[in-house]
Image (tube, rainbow, N blue to C red):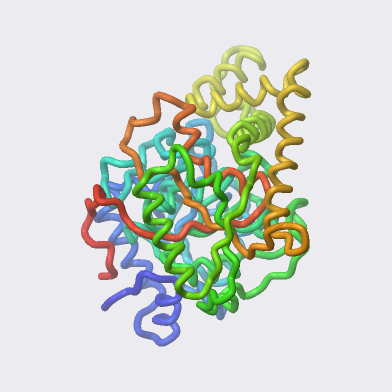
Length: 450
């Protein structure tokens, strides 16, 4: 019996009674048991739930969930000691909708602690390895979600993207990663890092699967005040395969200093293929791109400082008693949070503090507006370039080795230089594979079904 690698292939096989949902789940459980000891993608693996009776494109399909999505029947730790063993009393809306649509869940996936990182070296429990080369990182923060799909330990997974945490690991692992428009998928039940930037999205083997999973979980949610009042739709209807006349914006700021020649060559080759298929390549400028990293690490850390204040050792999670209240707060947070989380909390608290708020945080919000306007001008058909989409590299380089950037936070932060702007502007973004570097080779058995 052969189990397809794709969501649509598995759903079709179940409908045609070529195999059952339980058999599909058992196939992936066996692969996890056999291979995940070397990859480290899963933090919690459990018996898949019943596929239910829903007639949907994800019925019976086994999925993995990033471990910052609330699940009532499994722990949600955010890969942090401060939440070790914590079990929420409810499901995140995205999880609940997939569950109602008949999806199975294989387990919770490893990540950078509280989604803070670009390499998945910041998990409190274990690192995640890139399935194509175990000496390299899978990207972050959704490294477990990307690696699980790349190693065929799940046909699709959910991740979250605050500044590139879906698209960058998708690029490093050679899979498809989609960050929806801000507000398209409810954030209710997503443990918040930066509330104005976070968005849930899928990792899959192809664009069709990404559209299927997004369709199953998108739509307005009254439990999330930032949820867009837009009706759910079937996103697969847009997959026509026809790009004739499509205007693709190529921002000159994304093809300069710091971009690996190998990455640029692969991206240029993909763009040439689009042009040959009838698309029009239009050079554009997004002039405020140079400020995106600085703006992001002010806005995101400020929001993280506020959001992570709730982890105090009193209401849930780790508690390290130390006499009175304030010492207990301090000791719990000192022992419960990792170095990168502490770094970002301190940065955010500093830029929100008296005397610095206007100089840093308020100024960052003003520049964020300018970045948003750059994109609006590029898409404007009357006053701007009038492009339909914008194409850029996802990351300036291929997956790097463990320890290569972890000692230098600023160098690590630059890994997200091409993805951050979309989050600041609230735009959707997708990373699709366009090639491999000569140095990459598979360290696992071929991730083919069976």
